[in-house]
Amino acid sequence: MSAATPLPAQGRPRDEVLADLQRFAADDPDYKAGRLWSLVYWLDEAHDDFLGDAYQAFSSANGLNPTAFKSLKRLETEIIATVAGLLHGTPEVCGIVTSGGTESCLLAVKTYRDLARATRGVKRPEMVLPVTAHVAWFKAAEYFNVRVRLLPLDAGLRPDLRKLPRLINRNTVMLLGSAPEYPHGTIDPIEAMGRIAQDKGVPLHVDACVGGFILPFVEMNGRPLPTWDYRVPGVTSISADIHKYGFAAKGASTITYRNLDLLKHQLFVYEDWPGGVFASAGILGTRPGGAYAAAWAAMQHFGEAGYRDLARRTMEAFDRMRDAITAAPELYVMGEPSGPLLAYGSRDPQVNIFAVGDQLDAKGWTVNRLQKPDGLHAMITAGHLGVVEDYLRDLREAVATVKANPALAKEGSAATYGMMAHVPLRGMVREKVRDLFVQMYKAGGGEVDLHAAPPPQGRVDALLEKAARWYVERKQRRG
Ligand SMILES: *Cc1c(COP(=O)(O)O)cnc(C)c1O
Image 1 (cartoon, rainbow, N blue to C red):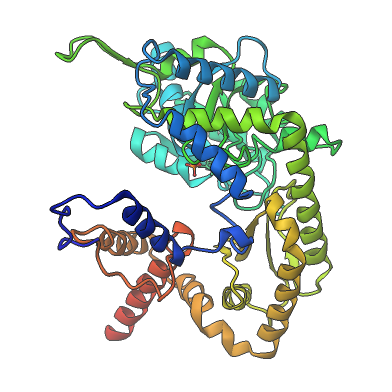
Image 2 (cartoon, rainbow, N blue to C red):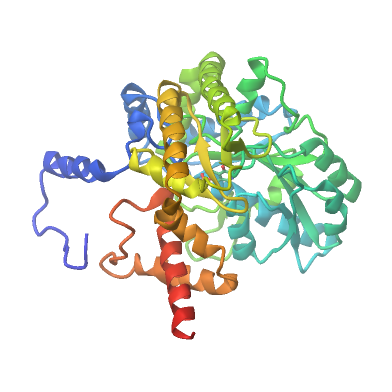
């Protein structure tokens, strides 16, 4: 689309329109073949069709008013009750279905900010986030004006709990732990965090957006995991996405609270609107019935046995990858990932890990880059079990290639990140990335050349490269 793309004067036949859509998808990452290690949780065509049918049956239904569509309220109630059970909640655990993990995280911050204001008169709210908290929490901080107190990591990349008590003060509205955290797949020490939270009298939210629909089944399959859910007394709420390891259609997550006294601070009510007295539980107005239906359908279809089987296959792929990377002399696995995701870096000064990533890209894989420390990322799903050996073979080749050609560290994403490390003014980087990103949204769609390939993982790696170039060139101009 561009500004020169008007609405067709005459409508076009449905078949033709659908064919266009199919054509547009041809340039997207090849997730169906397992080449993509993030963003998509894909099973097979039959499951896609099933989700599509469930979605379609409710695609016009609106969950805005929970008293109107009784079907949707029922789906929501059943989804939340099931999730509460999986998370070992008591019968008081309650919650809502949201449009995604970010909405769930935003809501937790809004809820705890308002709870603290109502019960403790907190006017300058703060929250404690481990450095590894998902970026959605930093977004929430900005949207809702809650100051972030960062909890640093220890040498093992775990939140350094010795530093936690000092970060909590009378303005603290919540603490956050993740199960697992997104960058390295490590489950934060939730039991210890729960004790500190209770001791200080502050709520503790567990971000299980990515883990919520797999860790319970990993545990049922007999693998011991640290306890992170409502069994930990200090945990007051949990976010869990159905559109990740629940294999729902995109647009479905949950936020649950230990009880209604917490949830009630999430609600919005406005009584003087000419459009009527208005109340809503989440951020959205119109809420997509199709997403609820597809999420409910997925949960019913898999059942405990289905999710356990997916978890088993996922963890088999995870184990193989973790073991192979640990065994490679040039590489190491970061932190202590519990699965289903992990990150790895280089422990060989001759092997630039981003150059390894570039080699993997060239072999048709799509992998995310991490920073602080530098690494590559893999969000592993059951579908990857069939390709994990191919990936590991290509990884070994990539490492060998980089080792034999040190100049590769000066090209591609390796060069970008190398440069980025030398840009001291982070605020300047932020502004530059913002400017470049905005270009993609200018009228007509913008022409930011994100390499020739599709933008990497919805992140801004290519934009970062431009920002870094801009900075380095500016520095050279100024001598
Ligand atoms: C994915 C994720 C989120 C955000 O969820 P979206 O559905 O992408 O909005 C939040 N926290 C963690 C740990 C995640 O992995």
